[in-house]
Image 1 (spheres, one colour):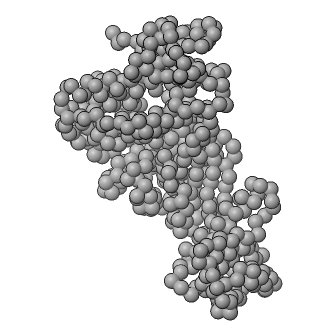
Image 2: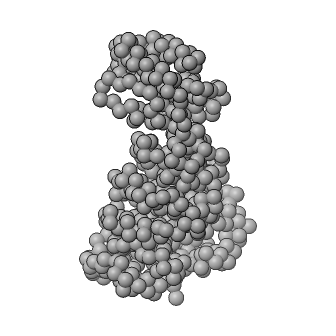
Image 3: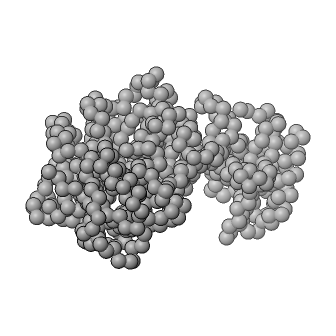
Length: 176
Length: 213
Length: 127
């Protein structure tokens, strides 16, 4: 039996916990606590990790990990991303500076992004169209990164599956 | 006309064989690429035990063995679980065909000399990608290392014409880097091949599990 | 969320006292459960804000583990190392749970640190 790992990261409130819950076969394990940061409009925040799981037909398992969003927990990012087959960065486009938010995770996972497949899902784009997806790709290009960027609603399992499908396509592309 | 790939079944009862024959004939996802054979050479073989004789079938160097097991049992590599699900069998056959395509294409590359290699240098605009639902996937493939048109065909399952059209659009928009060099097939170690096969199985099963085509 | 100044000052005093009175203590940090440094006293080149974040993660993961195995709420987590230990427990300030984190070298005695932390918790709770 083999274990594979997928990591969801991104800003607080972008939907990491929700995304895992949308596809995990059991209710995810969460380490949410009361949020005392008044700059974030959320009652609770992840301080350890979220954990979900998907079992495959041959007994292999895909483990889903959600990281805390805030940069003060970047030590957890390093721990959780070890041996991950893919990284999903979720961005909340309703926040004041989503491009700066993305930059945080690009820098935080700089080493891993050299080799690990990564896709960026941008949420709340219907009500908040700026920055546009093209703005995100231009920002990444300045850092010599070419990563797929798609709009998502992580409450929808199909959208989460699409993100995972893109990671799988990246993996397949590297095997040829 | 493209030659069909041949699937043999050893150790299955007649109703199971008939069912598989029907699936091969009617599955739209398989696109008529597979046919059931009852003897002789085959490209893939369903078998309980890899060590025993496979007569009346004949193994050739590229023949893929698909081991039959009961659900819940663990086995590495390509597995056919019983009671079986049609979608899992179709996924496995699609996977084998994709690998088969890659190995034959590699042979062609060896003899055909320098090939054009493409690599994305910038992620395409939303506008461009929205022109066709399969453009984004092709862009994803091109974002991970250099690819030939044949690679894109193998990965995406799209026609060569479609892939060329997409590449042309990217070239016109200055979104790709084009290289020409002789494609040297990487020498694959046994361990490397096994790891790739394992990963391919994982991807196939995950797609099946999540309902992603 | 802010706690009254007199409680924050009392918490700071407790941190200072533990650091100075007990052998081998390298840092005493009281953190909010979402990882912010509320009161601290550190002796080496340790970053209290970093320790606060890590302590809250460890405390939260400890809680999840004990709940998963139905052993009730987590009361503390101890990380034993080659050169000392890290002890993490909970305390209450103004009716709200916080995380008390002590970093110590091998000259410190864990049992004493546990006892002192318990006493600190009682005093600050009654403040």
